Length: 469
Image (tube, rainbow, N blue to C red):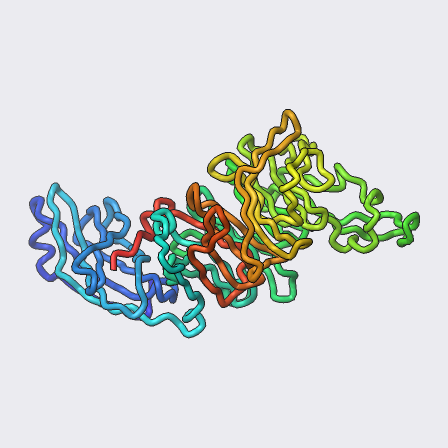
């Protein structure tokens, strides 16, 4: 690694002490910013022989409570990245070396972290409601938030509104981002002149900020614009929504002989961009049956989320018709359509209009953010779907205060049985809400993030851990 600043230490007595099974010692240390990121400190260590090595580090204000790096095993050159860094803070650290049944600890060294750059300061303003005790589960993780225009930034933010981790890209925005089961961050990247959640590149990084995968439109079978969702399936393949165009004769409804209808599809690719599977809304629905087609043909259905049901089949939400579909992942057959005009019977109280972020929650319920366009009040639903009997029941429903009505975008994810993290993108606010719709906590954001995901520290370990300051 190369760093902006570095310390260098040489142990002159090393060659004497390592003979005859003596202890392996630290020979050199180089320290500085990792990839010019102010919340990542890189350390390169050379030891006098092969050993298991790790770094211990702590803020001077933390009364000696320590973080530890990952362990570099059975090597004589070692690289670590310290990620639990608070801006503008004095730190101490040492290097622990284990070899030949013996453990040695270097002397204590120091460094001071940088202040965050101006463009990252004052991004989030968090407040807890009076007389409210936030659930422990909410404090035990970080929110994933994205800046959609260039320079794009992905943030991991704690309940205090503090940025604990970030990754920046100069020329593109993070249009959509998800945390994967592989503990990586998978995103759609796009230019500022591309629509809100649309892009032409796929980027996967780890928590160190190292690039694991980068595909650009035009590579392999990646020929179409992608939008609104990017996932990995159990085989490690990429799953996304594509703009699927069809040339049609629309003269029967007042259109052109060769008119273009922009629909949506599901594209599955391997990591090289080779197509594995493709599905199109045109396979299961005739646009000519839509009386509004001439008005909507440029974005006929507007798919806005894609996820998996517990059986591995797809759940896909559409903004323009206000429905959530379950689609057989093998045959492409539509298993059900939930929403107005769908084939699942709904209680009268389930009067949602447009949905985002449809997914199965920890209870096995279909959960989604209700934009509430018709009534100008957004909310959250969790539904119990009975596929066999084509019926549904409301498990949870609450409405948000009208002041944060959010007609486009948005998300809602359970934190525990009684609280939900809700993102109102257009209002630049993320809120923690109880099941009665009462706000427990709010965080104003400087950027209109598409969603606000939540990642527990257990998934972020060993790189990010709860603050001990």
